[in-house]
Image (tube, rainbow, N blue to C red; front, top):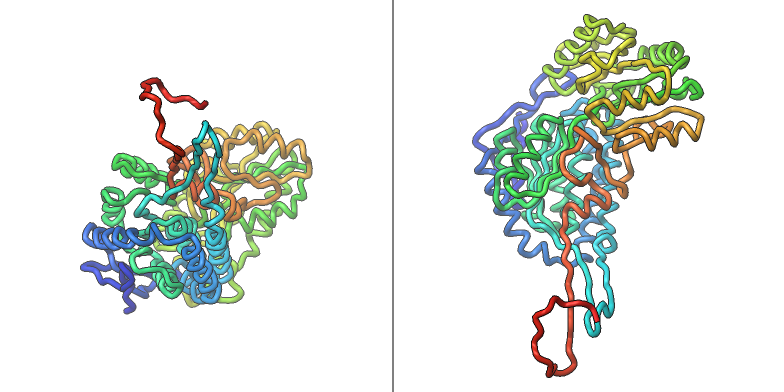
Length: 496
């Protein structure tokens, strides 16, 4: 069986313990992944500390050139990365390819690091005195990333951190670890010095070792809200800078004046793409007024037409979920919703895919007549389950969104500008789409939510990512032309 080891200091490193990586479409083991702990984390951090001694002083031009090479290598290996994602995560090849492309866009953003790290200069702030500011790297940074985007989410972090002059230790999900090792090899091929980028595989033991390590200056995380809260509290208690992105319950509000057929198509894609295993998936629809019955009918037709199968088959639109446990949890959530009074309009429970009886498949599920009190609405199911709520007015729909504990992403479908403006100003959500159901910002804007969807002060990538991975210095300079004859004064200095 294939073995997936750590990547530390520019070389493959074995481990004392290993876990199993499954093929979600078949349910069968396909590889063993190293499970690191404090010893492997110590070794990776030591390599990163040593590499930082020179990388932190490497010129902006040199850093930028390496990132340009990495960008080209990622593009050339797009197919290989996509197939690794599909094999271990289960999503379709085209869905995986989209993930790789969006991750590459962050590398492209980081290629412009010389411009992004420009400081400010003020001449003659006082007589003979100038002042300027600059951004300095932090040191060793760590990223702890989820299974659902094994290429894109880490690329929200490490290209910007490394471009800013930091070194990096990545702890990817042990469910789909192979893409991270390939990215490490591509970094090496691009000329990145050994130890600047390291990969430690593992579970909670590796995570806690990273959070507690005294030589790690900052931690980035994407995952569920309970884990995000743990990451934030434990890392902050160790004096680290932390950005921890948590869970989501993303709403799509549909007004009667919207193109309902178009809204149904977009919402179906956003709800069931990647089998709903996206932090930006639309998992709740709020149908306003007379839009409700027609919208549910349209959603039912679109959902029922989805072709479910192995991700590497050309006709598959939706693949399996990542584990057997995830499949069983999703089915149980639909069972509970039905018992609580929800109407199961499209039922994907019990789906069987020919030739893949042991695969982790669950079909798309559409639930109507859901209320905010039901667990199916309150909880992040993280699977192919879309729930529909009803509201009489836009203001009532906004109230439903704002009462939810999550504030990651939301969307409004309408043909009216005033309603859209009221929605944008009124919702307490970090990312908003108007007739766009999956409002994932481009790399030059930052990604992140509000409320229980974010712990920490900054979002990931974009200019906020640059701010997170650097800290400011302000320098005040004075070069007297000749010795001053005046006596020392003890008053607080002021500009003159």
